[in-house]
Length: 331
Image 1 (cartoon, rainbow, N blue to C red):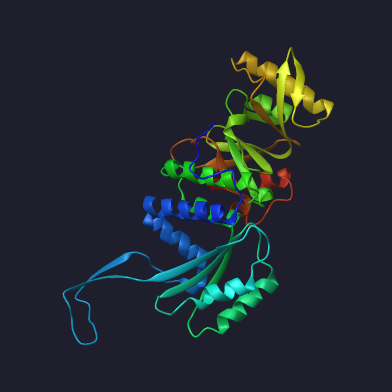
Image 2: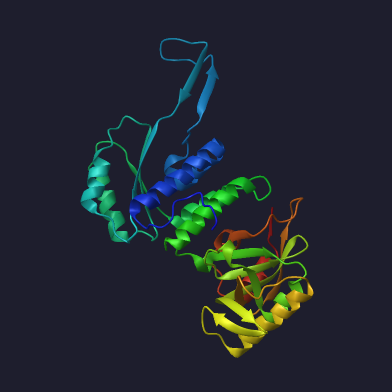
């Protein structure tokens, strides 16, 4: 069994909140600068000058004096309310918002859930805030959006250590059904000797123990670029004996079964035994593309991309995505 960074085996709100706070704490310890950028993007235009860092200034003019130096840090207070359902308790929200006392530079009510907030709920929260005598900023975020915001701050080559932490948090969220964004995820996987077979048999295989987060699109990476993109139709765990499927996690068409068996035979030629303990990702078809990695080094294992961050929206299908990626690149 893999060792995880984040607690599993429960879906209670306090566990989800604790794991999220642990993720943010780890990000802060890893890079205060990245943590600050994350909060700025999360808070948006209402907090353009948001700054969590210490300011070091000399010869600063105060109202009645000019001290030699000043060390100062802005104060902020972020309250977090997590729900695993769609709706928040307005009485509870009113009590939370009522606890802000106006003593901080920024007072932020952050709501977190797997779902976008209903417009009616947001309006009610805005009305509660208007009754306050101090400024309170309300922001809602989903687990998907939080992961995407952090992912956007990481560099594939320099931040591999934190990618491991973020990937484990994302897997935790997936296992607890906190994610609803699979149709916006492109998972890029390195393809070596199996590249041509992946295309021929419309599949990709990986060890089951590696786990996976739900995603709709898969990209085959080779020679510093994503060369093929396909949309996933089936994710199947199989056990094979004597060139026959003896166990399968779901029903599949004969064509898919035959393609898996052929891929298993080819893998043996390369010295790999994938008859058991493997998961097969079946696509409708792979479409040629050229989503190039322009930085110096090659890919560090698997990589996930949020499609709307690349092309500005979600993709209708794999053929469209492959075409739109041809003039894009990444670091």
